[in-house]
Amino acid sequence: MRKALSLLGFSILTGALMTCYLIIPGMIKYVFSLLSLYIGFQYFRRTEGWGLRVGFLVLTVVLALLF
Image 1 (tube, rainbow, N blue to C red):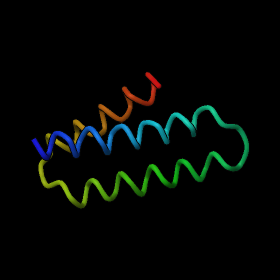
Image 2: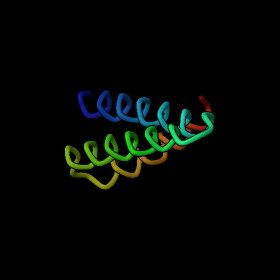
Image 3: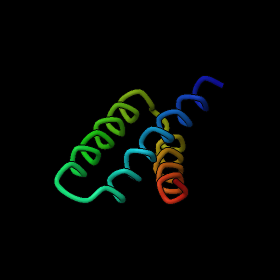
Image 4: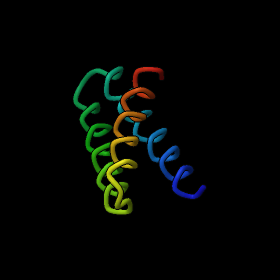
């Protein structure tokens, strides 16, 4: 249960940051990109399984497109 909530929370946050990267023009959009990369690295450091990592990537892309 804890792993699923962690996956969902990190994916929502990263998806929202990627959505800001896609929508906001100018140089500030790169800040959102760097923040999403940092959050992704933090999630990968905390998670050991390949399935959860792939799920994080897929869920992040889907949520970024939905937001």
